[in-house]
Length: 164
Image (tube, rainbow, N blue to C red; front, side):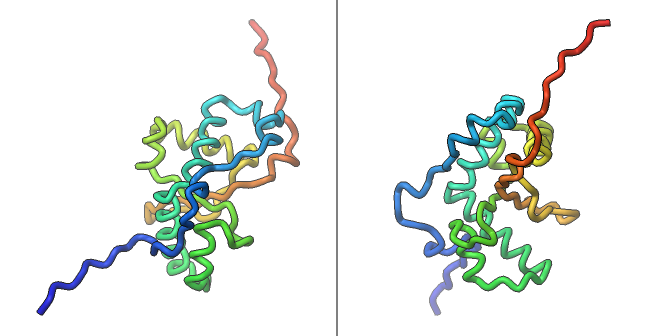
């Protein structure tokens, strides 16, 4: 009797492109030049760039694939395997721009737990990112989505503190 192979819980290989140029994050010039983006703290801007880079990596897409399967099971969303696979490669228009950024990944970019939470909240409040699915009390990874809501928000004004 032969040994059985251990099954992998990662996303299947067919969920990814073989194109070597498909592993980069794209940021548009109008976003970088916008007053809303420039009004963000430097660490929040860097975190946004790190989020776009993380969303494009194979490791990030595998985590997203696993998390979307969990969300589908927990919330009974009714997604097919095809919906989940196309969401991980940003082909599904309804779920376009989804990404996960677990602690083991954002620590590689130099963020600690407290600073990541602070700056991701700043990005959410400014309309650059929205939280699509929270981890809740299961301590699961949050699923975020890139958003264009920042275009409709007013530019925050910087006020100088008045000396007393």
